[in-house]
Length: 415
Image (cartoon, rainbow, N blue to C red; front, side):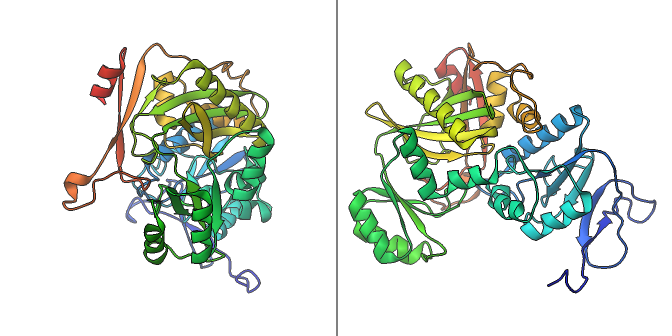
């Protein structure tokens, strides 16, 4: 409607000189008037979508990935155009990208920028879940999505398509179901068997996620925690008690998949991956289990046609490996893994997204370290007296610390 009436967004330079001198720093905000201050360029350019405002579950780890992507594009002679609405990050520093847009990460705002810049495409996999949520709408509007395709992203996030893919590959996942109303939720939970994990679909940081042990708990959750409707279904999974949780970060060029790191969680399954400490390489998993995890990861990457980064969360119970979820994007553990193995995975992934092969980039096999790296979470409990300090499936940490040593005990103590 806006466009049919001739109402188009224009861009203004942020006045870094308080009107004393002419501002040259190329970062912009949109408004609706006649004069457009955007400077054009004929160079090859790529748009990177950031993570948006910091919040629990989505923070500086994704900003690290975006900045690494900018560095990679610069090395390749490609202009980087950063879109983010968070001034408290490195990606929005005035000298990081070639051009910066302080804009919300919505379909309409990103389309306005794409129309102005005419880039080669848009990279959505470094900003966490926020850019991923608009990947399909952008693709439907004709925007080229670089790296893993929007269809593959949808396959990983659509519960039915994802189940069908795992069945085809012969990979197990915990019993699960979807409920669009309270009665359905009760029926699904009873069919699966308690305890179950319930959560809204398409959330990051485990928001409103809970472990439910009986019908009474489920009734309370449905009434108080979330709105359940056909447009807002609730996902219900069997909770694997006393299981070991494992995070895997991998990188693929569409043909070859290399494992970046396999991280064993120190807390058992049921604690959100962002809250659990983890160790790389794993210290208690046997060789057969590790080999199975690697094979599953490579098979899933091949089936999803991943180009760039991918994160998979596994649970191991009684030596049986289950897939919990697959994220065809950078995860919050990418900075940790990159520092642990000495390879900037986000930078390498950007070059892969732009058409380079892993072989060309010198990454031919998994890097096995001789040291132990441990990531421990940082919690804000001291700042908020009275807050619930019991960890569970909803993320509570606001940072992390890394420890490195020759032994697990010393690395854990340092972290």
